Image 1 (spheres, rainbow, N blue to C red):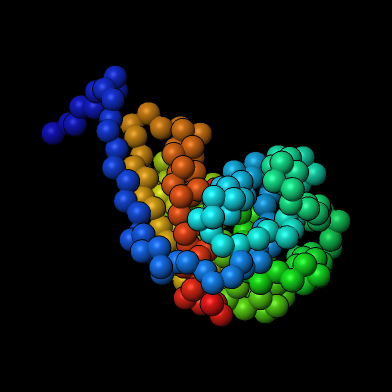
Image 2: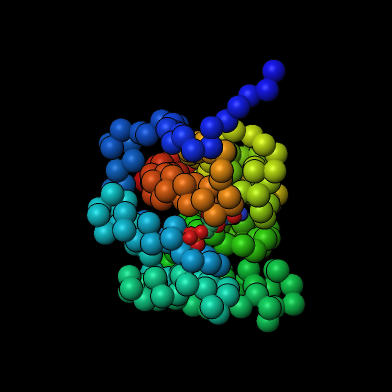
Length: 222
Ligand code: GAR
């Protein structure tokens, strides 16, 4: 039996998010200090800044680290008055050398949690040991599926019908570690990597601030 898909029809979509905790379970007693790292356009950084501004997330971002001189995130940091520091990975011989400088910057800024908001570099045990259980990552797939780069293309190529995004505590293995929150995003018949990524990002922006508060409550000193 062949299944006909009418490509001109408007598909209605469902999305499913990990249970959203009641507000009292994610209300933080004091503003936690987030050190954000980003490599690209910075829409997740901006979603966090907006959630802080809206008082949905009790936090401060004392500093942003970015690694690509042209990354749009630096303009977003300027807009939100967050000091942005360029640490270009190309000038460091070893990943550990970059991580040591990251630690220095974050410690100077009394950062408590590291948030990888589209950080496209592999981190090492040097960074994880300095911030044990304090490094949070967001990834555009329903982990453990589609780890690594090209997560969205991998999902499209695999022909799954549902993908999504995951916020998790980072561990040494790329895109692994305890999962904090996930949101599902249906794949539509005509999706391209761009259209699918845009819908995944809508969900990323919703779950990221909630997941950070949840992590601070569950794994932190709140
Ligand atoms: C996000 O979709 C994030 O999930 C992904 O990079 C994008 C950054 O977008 N991260 C990874 O792929 C990490 N493996 P943004 O710069 O607009 O926030």
